[in-house]
Amino acid sequence: MKNRFLNKAPGFRVLLCAIAASLVTAVAYAIIYSSTRFMSWAAFGILIGGAALALALVLCGLERFAPSVMLVASLIALMFHIYYIYFFISSVATGIQFSGFPLDFYVNFVLYGITLVLSIVCVFMPVEEK
Image 1 (tube, helix red, strand yellow):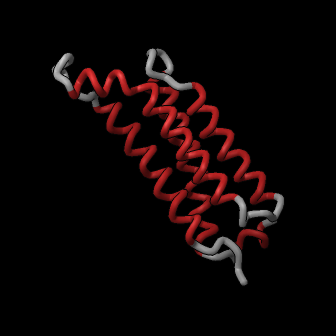
Image 2 (cartoon, rainbow, N blue to C red):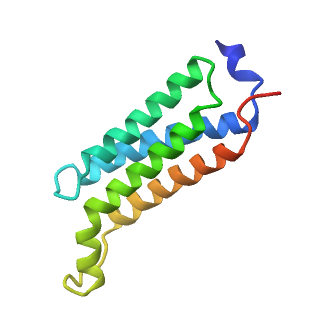
């Protein structure tokens, strides 16, 4: 199994980073928002499911499909997250709540952004050696 991961294209390593970032994002999202009404369990499940499916594809030798799975899962999870947190964003933006955005909000969006950017990058990078 170790030989399977040695001679891979750089996109393969980016793919593994995207899978890890997706799992970290899901855990951080659950820790930050699980006790609030802004938690989207669908986004959490899609992040975990996308990472698990991409990892399963890698382990089965079908890594050429894994970047697409990661990109679709990351994008759908981000859209669910935005849908659930929209009320909070609109109340701060319109001045109803002047306290501003907490640090947790920024941390979560940065993690989602990292996951999405890594997923986009690995779609355009070769993950298999030719």
